[in-house]
Length: 418
Image (cartoon, rainbow, N blue to C red):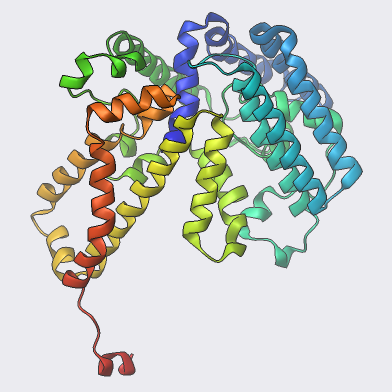
């Protein structure tokens, strides 16, 4: 759940960094209008050039000469594709180079605060370029060897350097995401993503709605952030008060109403979730164990976010919380008694209990995510007596015994009949 707040927190942080705020809102939307009004019917080369130079302009505007880091990684990624082809060696080389470059950037630029620096968009670019290598590799497989998801993103041809530049620096995703595939980008450039064949899509009204929703959310965070900043957790006042998690964002129906931790995860940062599921979790199928796949996936996300101990702690907590919730759901589903209660007129009461637990602990793993360092998050958890750790650890240990009590065991004769 913690990686779901990452891209939004970047935008929230942009309120204190005028260049980034201008790049995301007042500048980003005019770029989209220029493409819609003047470049929609232009050749692919013109569109690639526009996306490349507009993205480079945004990068230079925000990070100056440090734009060289993204340029270097894009060029090297293109060379890896061309020189190594559709091979496992290319995939591994891409993954190792891009991740090491990102982690070295974290190492040399990290502080104890959430800073807006070149590593912020670079972590988005890292996933994009690794995904490009994987999609290029998948494009060399037989159709029968690919999953349905892989068929939707596999690249049947080798992209040009200009195409890779346009894909990498596309102004709609370079700074803060979201993730998208090169195949989706190709469809955008070739005008295949329009709901009106041959004409710009009917996207003005939806775009304005999202723009308005974004401004409302940012306003709430700007006002709330004054009173409940991350540093509040370290004050003496916090030790005698309960604070509501400030990461209430993306005001969509599922996010606001779900009583489940997994529901919150699924309603936020959908494209990054899909990238991780497609390129990490599902490709670890060879391990033969979903828990191991989930564990390594969350470990990857923790390292991708940075080198602070807080990231490892928060993703470890996510692993425990999500699996406890899955055990509880399985218990209710398989128990005739509990299932009947959940489906009866008592469900509103059950929903309230679920929502109370959800709201109480939703912000718990975000504490180390926000505070980064050991001395800070340990102080906060100590002040509330590690209540979340205790609650979910006890639940994890007790649920198997509750399953034995509430889920009837099949008799030997029933098993034979089955």
